[in-house]
Length: 142
Image (tube, rainbow, N blue to C red; front, side, top):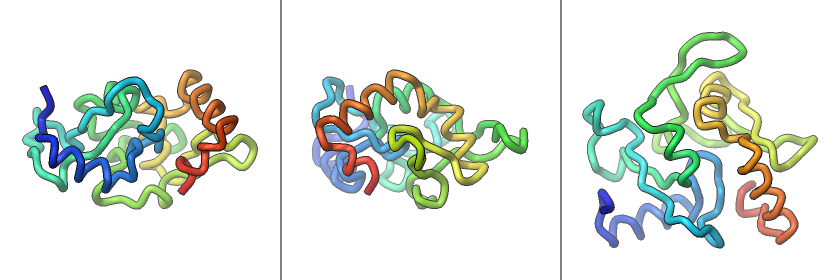
């Protein structure tokens, strides 16, 4: 059972550009329904309201789970994870110049989020490579 009604889901999906708000995987062509993530988990008093909800692919949603922080692999400091409502994606992530299917963290928050959510998991990279072949990668990069 979904935590939101169909009208709210439609609003959230449109706001997200019909893609995961963490790794930018497009919803189109995916078999699984993308869950609605509580950015601040309900177990930490996160509310079911638009400012605390994000569309997440099943991979990112499962790995984020109840986490709101993770360790930046460069500084070894614990930092807040990327917050899709408060942070600009472009300030924390970029696509690698060497391989446009690899995400790079350009801030401590970005690096920690990539690590916690395993955003460069080989399965996700394979999906991104298929998107390149289908000329659908532009949906990831915009």
